[in-house]
Image (cartoon, rainbow, N blue to C red; front, top):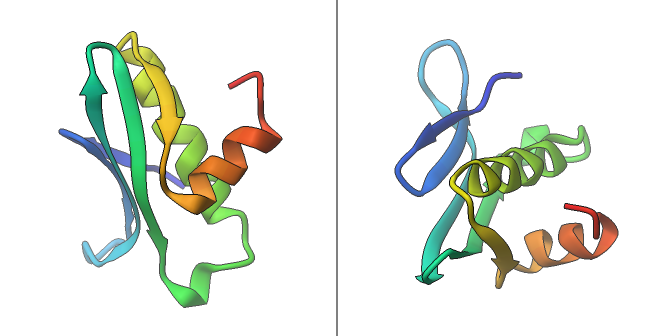
Length: 85
């Protein structure tokens, strides 16, 4: 599973370019990034895609030298389950 990064989005597409999963984040203060929206197509739910999506988003924010926060309920719960992230 290869996620792509574009500006303030981490996303997954199929081989035809159809969007399968997406996470949106934005810098809300200098060096602080909020993950505010995640979506995974229903047919992919229950396969760990959302968890991998948020993990990759956190990785991208850290790569940019940022601190992660979340207002998206799924991302917020994920961060609580993964406090080392």
